[in-house]
Amino acid sequence: MPDSIKADLDAAYAARTEGRVEESLLGYAAVADTARASGDLPNLSHALRHVSEIARQTGDPDRALMAGLEAVSACRTMAAPALEFANALRVAALALEASGQGRDAIPLWQEARGRYQEASVIAGVEECDAHLRHGSVATRT
Image (cartoon, rainbow, N blue to C red; front, side):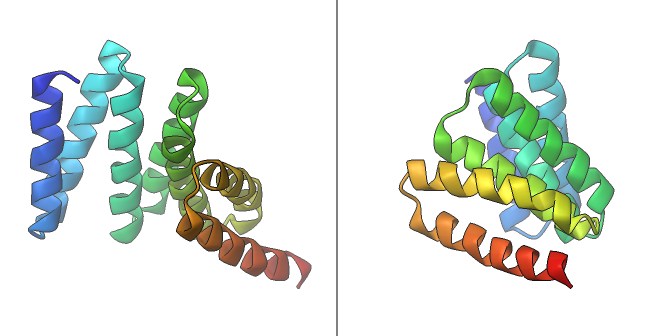
């Protein structure tokens, strides 16, 4: 990872932990732009996951969804490791739910569950199961 991207990711993370959410969002978005321009798919996916999460938490589901789906696309293109891929699927599924598209989130939760299982991340499997239970109930009503 280039030193400048690492420094920018560290700065965005620090801003977020210190409650400077907008600064953090801008920092992660800048990293995503740099990574996208250079074809750095691992850092693109990483930064976009944070953009998606912050955008969703601050009430911007459209931005969250765009970033989450692009993170998933980057993971598919680079054949990302299971945990990284699962995390991208998770933020995209959460963004779909936040956008009122819970049905469309179900296949992402299913895929994320498999990848969390592959990575032996039980908490991730359990979170997926909870969303799938909720989604299957919501789609039947």
